[in-house]
Image (cartoon, rainbow, N blue to C red):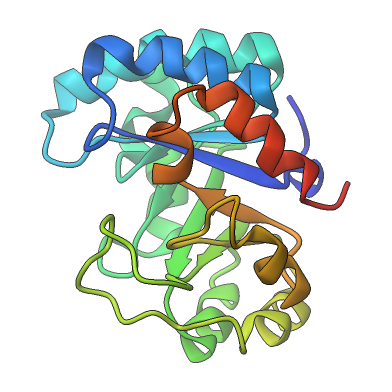
Length: 208
């Protein structure tokens, strides 16, 4: 599995954008195109449905050496064959997520301000998501944090920071110029005519 330190482009398979019957083909396209880490986000689906989808996607990621992350379901990590879980600020502590996910699982945490990022790194997650940088339909209730604080958060975190929220190929150079070396992209990948080609284009804009 690719080490987290080498992961730059984080793809998120969101069932709000991709129908269940297209998830595996989209996952294959994304990892083939250059996504370094992939998350399944299936809000509102039952535990059983999430588990079934995850079991279909896990072998695709494993075959590509790409870490596979479950959103919100650390208790399913081992059963699904995933590599870790991602939790939000309101979900549970990082310690609770680690306990549920099991030994060796990667745990990521969402943060929405520099203060939150500082507090969260004290919980010792493996990485944090920081944003939303820009307005995004994925998180319509969140106020964008902009790019001014990106360099500060990346510098202080001491762990990988994936900037997220409205990040697209078109504004990716701006995000990188602001100090980001890792990003998570959702709709720009999933709604592309060719998600694999879009992933490859975005990956080329990120540092190695």
